Amino acid sequence: MSVTTAAMATSTDGASGLREALLWCAARVVAVALAVAAATALVAAIGLETAFPPTPLIASLALIPVNLITLWAVRRRVRRDGGTLRTLLGFDRSRLGRDALWAVLWIAVLYVPFCLAVVGTMFALHGADAFDRFETVFVPTVTPGFPTAVAVVLGLVVVATFAPLNAPAEEALFRGVAQGALARAGRPVLAVALPAVAFGVQHLFFAPGPDAMVVYAVAFLFWGIGSGLIAARQRRLMPLVLAHALVNLLTTLPAALLPLLIPEAS
Image 1 (cartoon, rainbow, N blue to C red):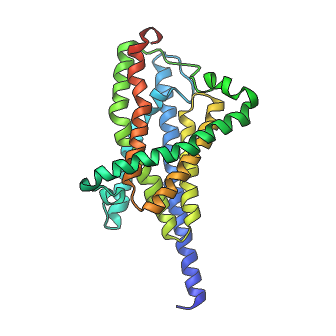
Image 2 (tube, rainbow, N blue to C red):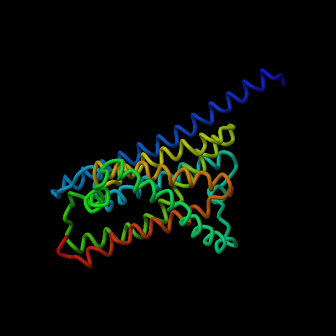
């Protein structure tokens, strides 16, 4: 193969990898946006007060079908190349203990830039009043006011489904398929950056207000960059999946507990 032909082949592979990564990332972001919008409309249709983006409880419920479809689509994609979803995620029962320890480490590592991004963005938005504004920026201004029993049931559904579905779905799509396509195409920087940007944009639809949307986008961009670098170095997704799942679990537990602790707020 001549130098010119080799360069053309590399360019074609790079373009193909970029198209595939863009398609997967865009499809995920659009699917999340549509699902959250549909859930918001449904809550409004039954006569409850809501806003867009809705509360994290409603957004998390909306992601159940999105995550199921994501896992199905990724499974089909990897099977086309003769692989399996388990292989893509790096699932190995004999390594779960070590993967769990890695997960704890990666949570600690990823939370450093994440928290710095949150604080830095708050200062960029509110200056010296940043810490005072924490009390309002991340609190939903509109809540649906579900009856306590309904809120508890919905919260338990979120706790039982969100972490087990969302963590593998997002890691498989962003760090597995999208990052993998760009890495194989010889674009290692873009392989980390593009999924991280999509990961940040996706979290706009979980923010409780306009200022929080900016903070979420920046903070989760940094989380995505860190996860992409870890995936590229470790070449296994399972530690990241476990880290992601643990964080999701800890952030969704309040959805089930708060209606019990503060029933009058429901």
